[in-house]
Image 1 (cartoon, rainbow, N blue to C red):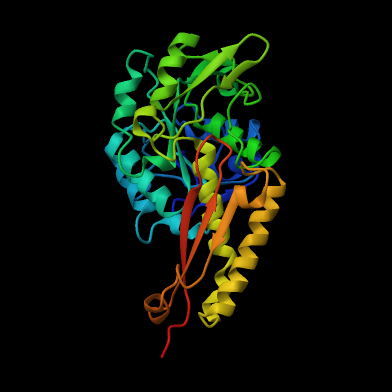
Image 2: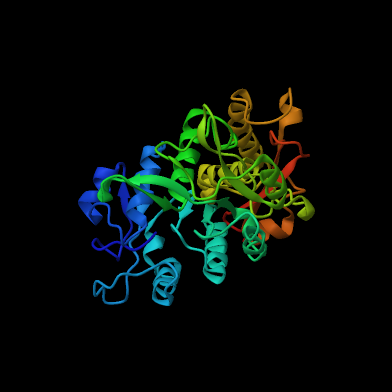
Length: 358
């Protein structure tokens, strides 16, 4: 989401390449961050994206910077009831390049939680290793487990400026790496490490030492680093609930995103129950169906544990769905999985509506 000089504002446009973006929204424009982030997303492994153009009411062509109040107002309208974002059936990552305003980010974190999606948050361009902690501390409340923070900005040669090296927010690069990692190894793999290289990057706005990284990473700040022979890479995979002192079960990006993936997949995969009798037979069918799905992921190495019973469980019976639930037309399913990061079982609970008694 972001401002561009042209394109529709009443709907999100689905794209599969930067060429698609150019045909709808125009080419790279030094006044806007969004075109660059979209290009960087595709350059780094992204294949499928929705773009939602943010503009002033009336779309009078005014350039909107992400820190403008008009931009925040238009963005809130787009994600609010009846907004253009409601037209998107399913998405799993959200980026607003360069956005750093606390209240707007908090609203996007809540929006992502409601949509079972994950927000990639940029640091301010001028942030340093000495000042970045204060910025992150203001972003860790409420629904922050559905987001991750990346620091610093990335140096990239701008084709629209004769290849001049400029600073860009990390979210476009990082979103592409998420997509690349998901496709190659699965959502349960951390989008970080030496394989998580930022294609096209020529450096960072701030170069971090190992000592600085060791101070920032335990605080939930995902640093970008440059290493000889490996280039610029993502060197952290924590959510904004990832500070050691928070003790959150959603400390790590792949654990949180795996839970979101399971919730959405199971919810969509059990829509058929809405026309079935809410009884023991249905519960048994649910256990078989979800169990087969979880077993397929187990065989792909998605969970910790050497046997299925150590890797996951599915519970759907009279304990999870009581007679009171049946009378209210509710079917409850509890699914647990052992994530690949060190942790106990992580529990997710889902509910479907089925015909009530009487």
